[in-house]
Image 1 (cartoon, rainbow, N blue to C red):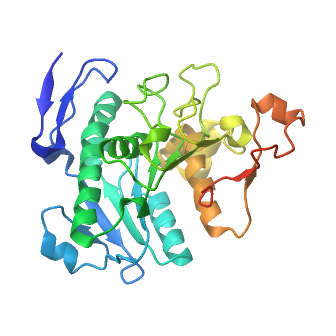
Image 2: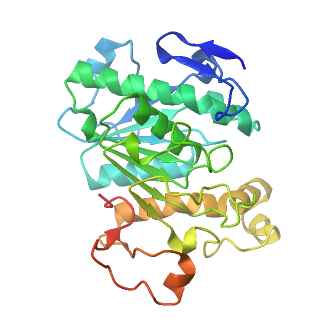
Length: 307
């Protein structure tokens, strides 16, 4: 196998259990950290690890919690759900919200390469957390990393490299190259003090029907509607294209189930209600009405208030 090293980000191989591809160099990925606060809800400040003065004079509030949102394959930080999640958090609480833009790796049709690139992006996120920790005297347990799809595993990589991150939320963690793999490759409960995940596009038969994992990856794993086949996502491609046009309708058709985890999480931020989830061995047992008690361990709330 081949191996590349990128200065302080570490060395990477294309040998199993990793994808058979080397990650691109940081210059190609061009990872950016965009800070939003209640002082600049629509005008982000770009924070750079080497720019001490710029970070010191930014709106970063060392007395507030920090939410780091990481997009997945094909996306960038301009997508609607990222903006909606950022706004929902800032309306609810006075937080630092940081959007991680890795469009240099994600905006491609080469999924294998994007999956390989997650390791370098994860290293950059870890380095950024360390930078903020020491520059601002800011405890790592106040970081909450929220990743969608490949972004879930980027958050996991960051948590493996820097222990003590407070929370990681995986929103339908990506399946290809990660399902069934050992913990060093994917999001895992040891990656943060608390790890939760919402699964919405899995495939119980492990065929290539779903983009998301069915395997549990956290301390709490939530499977709304059994973790697959979400209500409203069963329409035909024709109906989506008719309602949204070719590009919008086609994308919605493909990722409807996969994005549902994001939509549910945003709804949980905006809602005053608790989204109660019942512990159960499998979905059919739940549907049969055999899991309608909270048991000794108690019930949990899915979404923003899971912890």
